[in-house]
Amino acid sequence: MSAIPSVFRKAARSEPVRQQLTVRARLRRDWPLLLMCVPAMGLLLVFHYVPALGNVIAFQDYNPYVGDNPLEAFLYSEWIGFGNFEYLFTTSAFWDAVRNTLTITVFQLIFYFPIPIALAMLLNSILSPRIRSLVQSVVYLPHFFSWVLVVSLFQMMFGGAGLIVQTAGRAGFTVPDIMTNPDTFLFLITAQSLWKDAGWGMIVFLAALAAIDTNLYEAAAADGAGRWRRLWHITLPGLRPVIILLLILRLGDALNVGFEQFVLQREAVGRDAAEVLDTYVYYQGIAVQQWGVGAAAGLFKAVVGLLLIVGANKVAHRFGEQGIYSKS
Image 1 (cartoon, one colour):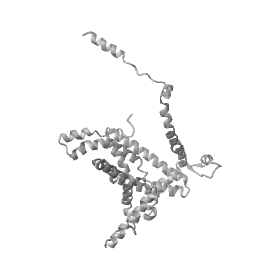
Image 2 (cartoon, helix red, strand yellow):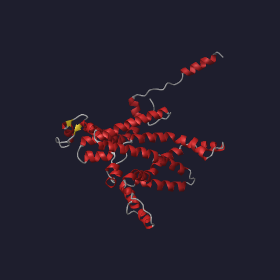
Image 3 (cartoon, rainbow, N blue to C red):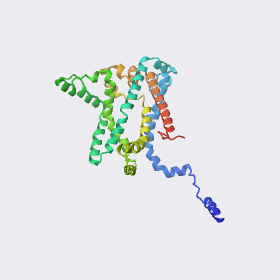
Image 4 (cartoon, rainbow, N blue to C red):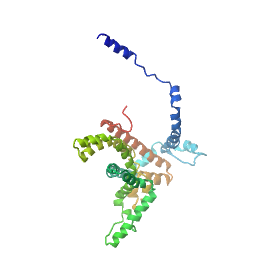
């Protein structure tokens, strides 16, 4: 009996030690994978990191016509510090755009974000693979339509001379023209976004549903759990990490609700209803060539989005979820 501990001690001493590879050895081993990442890294560098250097315009009275090239325009433009931000924060039009943007974000989080989840669960319950594939294709096809086409379709259906309005008029009913009503604009853009992108968002949740072990459903059914109890105790917990991840990313885009959809309908409903930060940057920054003001508004959006992502991710860690990055 006394020899047993010594055997275990020898076995413990004889365990292989994981050897640390040198940088050259790792490069020699992983160079095909690194080579595959080069195009993606190049795209990120050219279209994301290099343009980020242009945020210096937010602290300048930028004039693109100073000097003989864009670099000299950066160097010779007058440095005004936080002057552009002071102009933004004392302008009522900017805060109107922020209020409209946040209102749209909160409204769509409540009434739009759950729709793809519900669609995925309904589609996942269809037993026939052919019918499921057909419904999925039909539902996410509008994602590939441009906003010009989407707004035109809604105009032809719900506009003053649209099909639904004209048909209701012949039947003796009066239908308001929702396409030019500022009071219903929030519902209109939500309906447009829902019709266009709900099917595309559903794909992510379908993938998450496919990863849930079907044995859990069989075991729950054998224990007498009905459809709703299986939904509450198996399906929703299986979707929770994906829901939290997408919710965090959506909060990061809280001040980025889009440009085309609003600029196409801005004249119809008025600036007070359709002015968001993206259109504000265009009309107050680019259209009138106040480049520094537009860059300051864009930098404000980016900083607020970063703070929201970091804060939401910390809240996710408090609830035991990984979020978009692991807790260090």
